[in-house]
Image 1 (cartoon, rainbow, N blue to C red):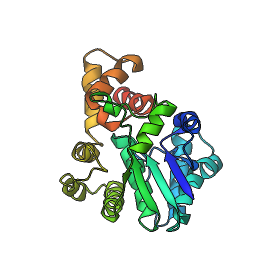
Image 2 (tube, rainbow, N blue to C red):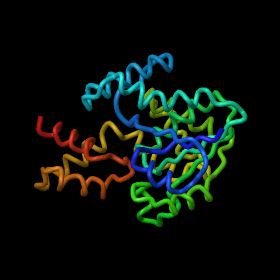
Image 3 (cartoon, one colour):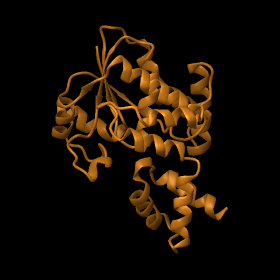
Length: 242
């Protein structure tokens, strides 16, 4: 069986139109923030459902059916299966990717990384947001097969991020692989996530910009590596005025 893990629902229609064979799984998480604790996968999902419910007013039951269920399929793969991981370059997508690789580290499926290769610098961080079906086909043609070492690295990165282990994360800044472009920049952003985004928003608001419509594009310009959406930036603005 062939599976495709898409980075969000926005890519579903373009993927369907591309005609690429396989079953879609949609990543609807934001593991870059919130509770990542849990000694088991079930406990992890319980904690995530509670966080999502509190932060976004979502029903925990909906989390299980529309979010956790997608990830659980990765725990059921065999060596006869293939999984294609469609993820962007910035930290938001990177943490979600690392989690998927942590799950896959316990399976023997053939795995591939797919990136928005149709974008050129400096737009390479814009991701799959405006991808057409032809763009999706180009990404599929340029996919990279993940080695066992790549999967172990992704798993280790997720564990280090989950545990807020800055020492371990710092070690990974020197790791190199075609499957993890911009890894140094992304890991450095992960190390500073508890301080740097807040400092940047504070600097922007001190300049006289306070509305989300003004702050968000400026934050994206300065710290696009985080991949924050308007919700994350809005929460940082609220903390500045609390």
